[in-house]
Length: 263
Image (cartoon, rainbow, N blue to C red; front, side, top):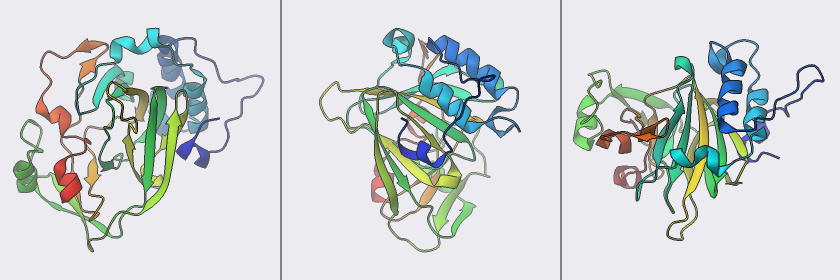
């Protein structure tokens, strides 16, 4: 049975006339996701989030399917694009070195489904801070380096702040193991994902579906609940091919930084 935030969803039910398929490969899962999500992603009427989650759960992780996407980078997690969903969703594999995690972050209104392919991950769910407000902070982005490699940045960049500084409130912590799948959205709160394994070389891999796709999010400081706009989310590899030059912006999206720890 799937663990973590998936428990907030109704158990998917398959009828005799419309059973949830069992993908035999990652390529088949991609094709089935295209068919299931249609032209508008999970926001489309008639698309069942539970059914899509069941589809991802039914796929059994196979190293032969995903090894070409397993691009690790020491000390940071990487995003590796599998399929862009014709602009309606992004399917990607995240590679997590040992003892590496994301910052606490939102999902910019996107639905997120996450399945562990190898190793294990810890998911920590947080309450939203009280009275989060947005204010102009282009200078803050430049000062922190968040906008230095993002040519799309402009004066509309924002940082979110809570009206009263206070530590983030943890709602739940869950360990996800191989082939377990969880659902997340902004309606459920904020979360952090991390690889709890500490042995050298003990990397973990996870398959993520984001619909609609998003390029930026907000990250939150655990001690103060202060938040800021992330850099533009970019990929370390696309369809198995390592990008020729991976800009530093790749590490300034939802990655955990010293500012997030000490802000």
